[in-house]
Each structure stands twice: as C-alpha cells, then as structure tokens.
Length: 161
Ligand code: SME
View (cartoon, rainbow, N blue to C red):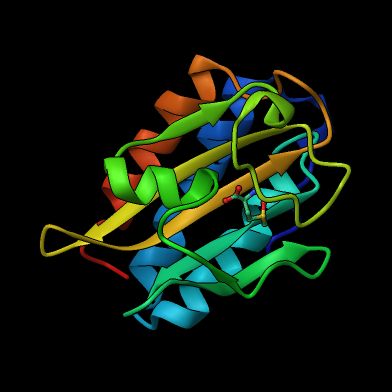
C-alpha cells in the first residue's frame, strides 16, 4: 500500500481530518500490532494535519506515563500522573484542549515552541491505555472540529491498541 497523500495542501481543516480518519481506518483494518499502529498513526497525523510541531503517544505505565511512538523533536520520556496536560487528560478521562499552554498551570514544555495542545485518551476494556498528544506552535490552533475529529479517532482506536 502506498500513501502519497496527494492534494493534501488544498484541503481545509475538516477535510484533512476526514482524510486522516480514512487512513487510520485502513491502518486498523490492515494491522493489529499496537506499536506499528501508533507509529504510523503519529506519522499520518503529522503528515495530514496543519501546523503541528509534535504528534505522538504516551503509554500508561505502572508509575507514570511513558513516551511512545511520535513525530517531532525528542520529548520527555516520562510524565508523572500529577503534572501537565497529558496527565490531566488521563486523570479526568477526557479530551483536553489547551489554547495557550502558558496559561496552563503545570504545563510541561518538551519543545519550547509549543503554544497550544490537544490530548486524547485511548481505552482498552474500559481503561485508558495510551493518550494521543498533539502540540502546535500556534496559539488557539485546535478547534471544536479537531475535538470532534479526535473523538471519532478515539472511538476507532479504542480496544485496538
Ligand atoms: N506538554 C505535555 C508534555 C508532553 S510534550 O508536549 C510532548 C504536558 O504538559 O503533559
């Protein structure tokens, strides 16, 4: 299978999300290895969505959240359960959108160019097993369209990772 992602540059935000969802569906139909899926899904997110500087996964470990497959600059390998945006999404069990990370008390800056962030929990058998983390160098980058799109992505990925 080849992924040329032709014509992406002409698409609007909603169309890009639809395109991303269609590629994620194909991946989930074709592959059942969690590591391979997370690796390619982070690459698809980065290739298809605009204005991101980091896209990847944190995996739920026994004592903290552990860095998984990602695209972007090297990141913090472990996040404590009680600090930062990813851990808050884990604790609250909900998608968290941060319009300006400098206004978020306890934000952990792995890349100082990050300005806004979206975190999405993924579950298996009712428990969060990993979280998708997206960073953007643009304030207010993430919209309700992104939140709705990533709700659909989480529904597709739940019980598959
Ligand atoms: N900003 C995150 C840390 C992970 S990096 O963005 C990749 C946080 O506050 O939890």
